[in-house]
Length: 72
Image: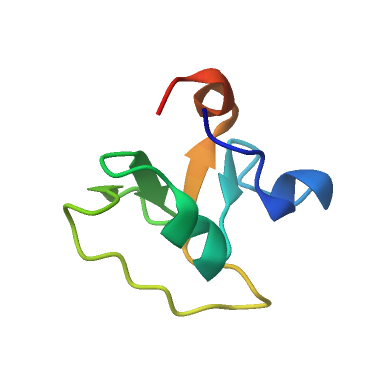
């Protein structure tokens, strides 16, 4: 199960669809978790190289709310 990201508690959705992640949240995701960049590129934690540069504390990678209830 994925924990709700910090952006969820700050009500900071990207494009009204995905919740952006901090670098620490990206690191804490289970291997193989699907993430999507703000440009629409799909990546998988631990499989693809995910750039963790930040703007205002968040990376360009996010997850969707339905993923919070999926098992790791």
